[in-house]
Image (tube, rainbow, N blue to C red):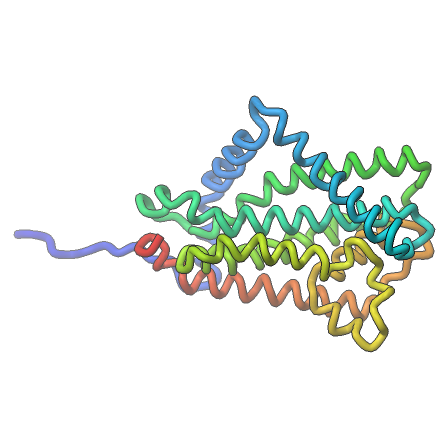
Length: 276
């Protein structure tokens, strides 16, 4: 007698089973993260150099345009270069994570079409390499502070929490773009455009304090506003103030981005193998 039963593997719908399944595939996460790390850094100098040169060049350009020519003020008594670089740290981490995760599903199309595993592992694994880039840039930042005789305060102990906020916001945006890129390949051209705009609408080259008071709460809807303000509060002078109400708005915006990204990604995940 011929067995006519079929086994269909689909992503789990239960929230608990979904996270348990991710934990069960943690070895795959380690493999993907380590593979990306080796591609970026093994037997190459450009990976490390690029992680250093990119924020430094951007910092120099912004310092000349906005600090020297536009005469925008610094914040907390810090040199303008320090103020800009303190914002470049979370910005480039956010931008790199968002860009890498948005293209991760298309890049791993062969794996997705051949075997089932939680697709969420692929975009999240990009966090490993971008975190390494962040740590390299952070070392350069501390060397710059030492060169300019600028010493951070004890508030630096809060830095990991603001980094976590940046990671959650970036992966939330990355999940949206990764899922949309599978269905609409034009989104691979949208991401660089979004990043170009985001660099100038986020308080990277200027202090968010120059935003008029009546617009600051609306401006805080950008999740990077709270992240960048938090980094400067941690790394610059004691005189730097953090407007906690506006920070809470940015934090809520970032969490909403993450939750909605997880929801949308899980909703369309089962179609990836068919349309990728």
